Image (cartoon, rainbow, N blue to C red; front, side, top):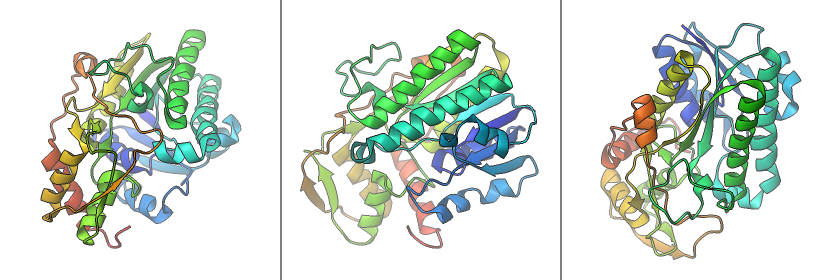
Length: 325
């Protein structure tokens, strides 16, 4: 049994991961600041199963306050691996509030790394994003691509900066690191601001779905439990290996065009979508497309959930919610 510090544990991916790590026999020390990006009760509900588990503990603090905030909030118990999911997410909102994204995602990550250095904690799984690839023309996206001028949103820049920070701490202080670039994760507990969540709500309400651009933009949609399986495998890899510094794509290797996604959402809801056309949004990329061969080779990562299955699971979950958000 390992002791895992999980930042962002009350969020969409974090809460699923906490449950998986507990199922795998680990102890989970959960950390979250309940950022008001969406309602706190939704995040509290995400933690219901974890809070009832004897190997789970929860601590509320904000990484922006510095390493001392972690010292104050957390017990002095040993930590074997840190899984850093906490971040301010979303491309569009980052265009409107760039400073908030840099403060949360870059400064917050720097504070966490410094706390790890002070505590001599040597293993980190860092959640990055497919946004770092920007409008890279070569496809599928490989981890060894030169991304120096690729970022076209503050969110993407903040995530690539986080990867640079982990590289620095690996080089200077011997930190073992897996950076994982997530590709458009969806499924039960998805944030209310994300496209699939919005599309399902609009369809069920009989309203039109907004389409930005001509509908040809495509995303490598990845079901949340497939992403979580990749993270859990990454944790085991870190526990079993020394001298690690790797960057991996955790995607589905199957881009889906926006119009194709909307049709699939319509099938899952059982209604014919009505479209409302809009111009492209600033910061949006044309396509995300993951080369997952490295994650497959290193971790045995193999996503299993197709789009129709994943959307059906999401719709079933949303129908069961006591209050639709």
